[in-house]
Image 1 (cartoon, rainbow, N blue to C red):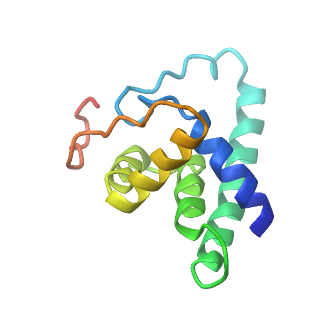
Image 2: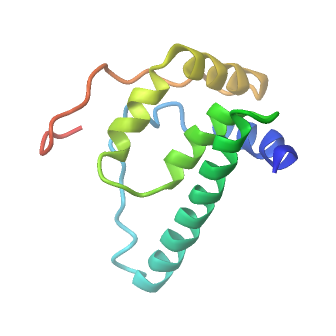
Length: 124
């Protein structure tokens, strides 16, 4: 898992759109293909749980623990996930590490989202 995260984490972070944390997500395809959507949600959450456990282990073992946990959270589905993602990326070490990885891959830096959790029911 250590070597997998060394390869996968930079690729995933570099592939994020620069405005991932500032734009509103668009999800219009699940209604057209509900069976495929269910399969992808189960697979995505399964991978998220594996990465979360690996990231927690890497906090005390060698590896990119914090970045792996961050990517795991991005994969998991739970209420107010978007708010948690934005809060995490505003942490200076995570933001700097993600943008350092993006610069190495010749990608533009991530846009920093506005501060604060949004209230339930508030657009964002």
